[in-house]
Image (tube, rainbow, N blue to C red; front, top):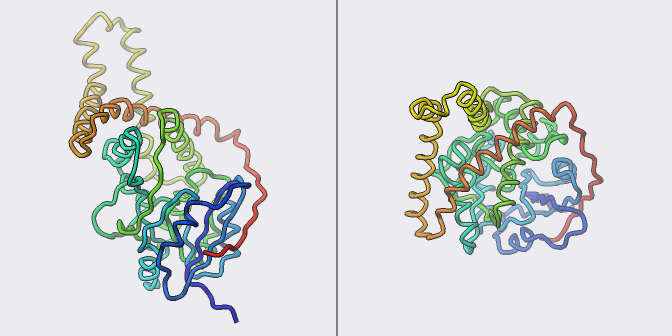
Length: 326
């Protein structure tokens, strides 16, 4: 009789790609006593790929990794220890930067891990405090484990969403009373966007995914993520009001209308100075551009997601799941 593995590691990746970085890194990670299995789910629809792989998995725990994740040496042992608690449904930790980075990647990491850059979700990109009760704002799918029975009972990820399929699913779990855990020791390392276009595109995609998620499973707690969109609307309305009312000729009137902008820019400067002090990185002033770029791209993404939802087409993809040697 085949021994049942304790943890099934599931790696979603595009078709036709070679051996993923995450699989190579797993070979350096100590396996728990129950052992592990690795499933590669190939396709172009990540939510569907992961759902199919979970159905084929034999482990009590399913651990999702992105194909470019470098796994910390203790992760599997930590997961095995955490899931001894029978009421635990989900566990995960942060996605940290690699040990070697370009100056731009380091600046991106400083922005993503800051209060101004990511607010409630900053724990996804920076190891914060001790292990604690978590929610969808704390956990990230490239480094997240589920109890398989809970995952299947809740019907898995919404296959019409990408990205943000994990956020919608975690909201469902929270409302079902399931317990989730964030452990900063349970980390992976992944490369950050290497140029400004990649960074802005990533932020735009996250914003669009947030709106699609909200339509799929509305939660009042998600409204906080629309602050950048409201700020963008304010900028548009303030500009129209200033020129439409002739306030452009009045310095005092213009200052009053755009006072929130000056406050925002002051916060950007302060966070940038903190980043320079933390990193000792001379190129960190690029953060003066990255903060507003991240917020405006995210805001545009949320607006596009809101307007485009009625016309959204469901993605279809053939999925191939293969079991490989870890």
